[in-house]
Length: 321
Image 1 (cartoon, helix red, strand yellow):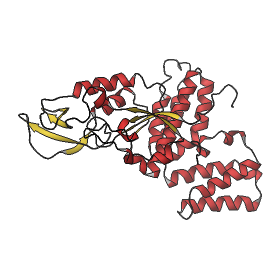
Image 2 (cartoon, rainbow, N blue to C red):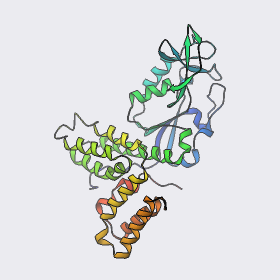
Image 3 (cartoon, rainbow, N blue to C red):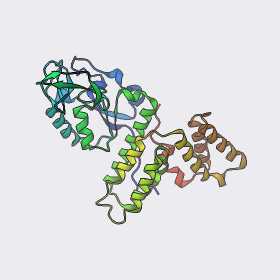
Image 4 (tube, one colour):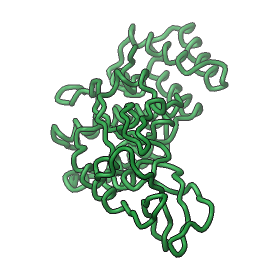
């Protein structure tokens, strides 16, 4: 299975990131925002490429703060003190230009709440006749972030503050390594053989996150026939959408149950019962996921199985100290 197949990417992967999250003092008030990003646990996995769109479009440091404003039904990035100071087009155009330069990055981390870089729930202020006309709602997305996502919809993205949550962080890391692996596959020449090999490696990881998307991927491959050159980008959206869903306990338990079947004939009675009991304990919430995973890896170390050995599920991204 491994012959002629690109190796999984090794850290550090290149990660685009809002410059302020690196601690650089580029915010409107001359401050940084290093505390809003978990540097210690990610520094060995990623090499950072800092980007500050507001500075890049000439807004300076310090500067008049901007906000998202709903003006006549159009969301704009305007100065707080004077909505005539409109930076919407420069920020959008800069984002579109940057998107063309991110071919080597595996993901992008944005500054939460920012009218230029926020991904989720950015405050949008209603305006009428050029004046603030009510309380904001949290329905917005930063102008620069929106341009990046529109141009690169499959690129893994997240907000720095959300990455302090271990579940969201692991999900994001998993997606960046899968995205980078796909990029390596395409750079070496995509064909039906290596596409099937790639899908086989990600089958159980995708199952843990979303059986719906696993089924979609299977149907897409089954209908591919000889049109891989024209449909080469059809698989990645399914994979990334599926992996974006947080893997559930039942999803993990289902995958573990499938994987144990590959080892049943090689294990004696006590070993089979121990593994089954560990999976059941995890399913019930009595054990952490690492308990049945460690048993599976232990048995695979003594009884290698070529198919399981390449399963990304067992090692979705490199472990770092």
